[in-house]
Length: 89
Image (cartoon, rainbow, N blue to C red; front, side):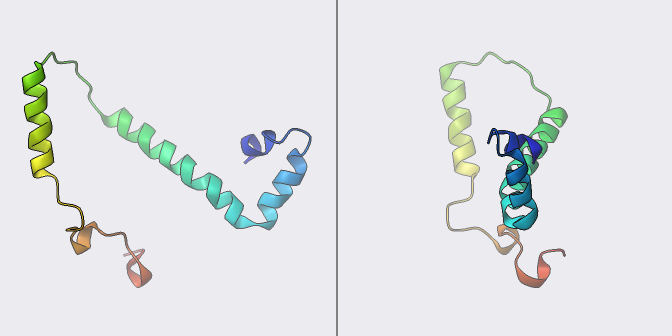
């Protein structure tokens, strides 16, 4: 929060007070921070290797991925975000 408040030079204390008064403001900061942490974690786990491929091989791989991807609007119930009572389930 302090870094966010520092963007408003001369008004840092007022911004911190706003964050304390209005928790929804902190949620607008919390979501991008969590996203960054998740991306950093996934990148730590990833094994990255360079591989030289031809244009044809790359196009075939992209087509295969597109063929295997679920069609838009055909998501199953398990693919949808949790709502209501099952949020913490």
